[in-house]
Length: 270
Image 1: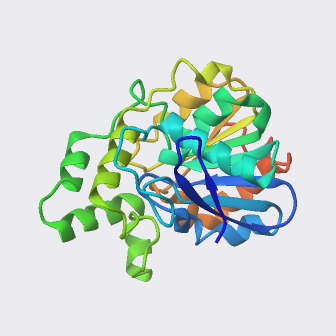
Image 2: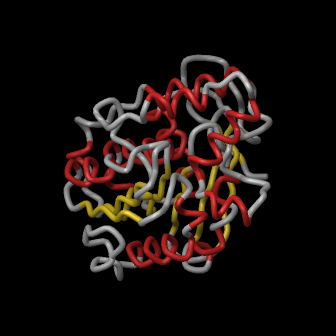
């Protein structure tokens, strides 16, 4: 298993597969690289795909300190690219991975070719989820909370046909302290002032029925980032990239290859 070490001494696990231009895939909050398992093959056919375990997840170290932040996660991702000798990569981040991707593109514009931000938010000045959604996830009944999360990630029709296992519900082996720190890092994200400095052509993808991270955040990001285009996928919830793979993967692939300028022109469902 390949590892690299960050300047603050944290060991990060990463994997690569495929061939072609490098594409860095960044997973959601409290998830490891397996977040991408259902769709990685779509991208490995066209790109050299790079995934990593965030600090606190998977085979990476799990420090119990205040080094967790979305900007820090971006720096960790950059360490992985450095370890691979990758000077410039496409970046596709979803959910909290999209928050980290914003910082990566803003702080290191020369390192990001094309940028895809999926089911994510600009942070504190974005549109928050409804209080009832937060309450459903904070239930003391762990099974009820898990069911609430599943229903935010996937449609009822998908869940009837796909009983699991699911790779998007969090790293089951993640220690509680790291889970809390991931939550705090994601909740404190605020890249609003940095977004206009992003120079990479950007596609903003979101499920139109996403209540976990409201879809209204997609146009906010697209308006704030120069040369950004939003695309809402009708009927999709938070895990649009898995359930609506047949729509989402070709959309992203076309954009990354430069073919998707028409498809990502901004209208929902285009």
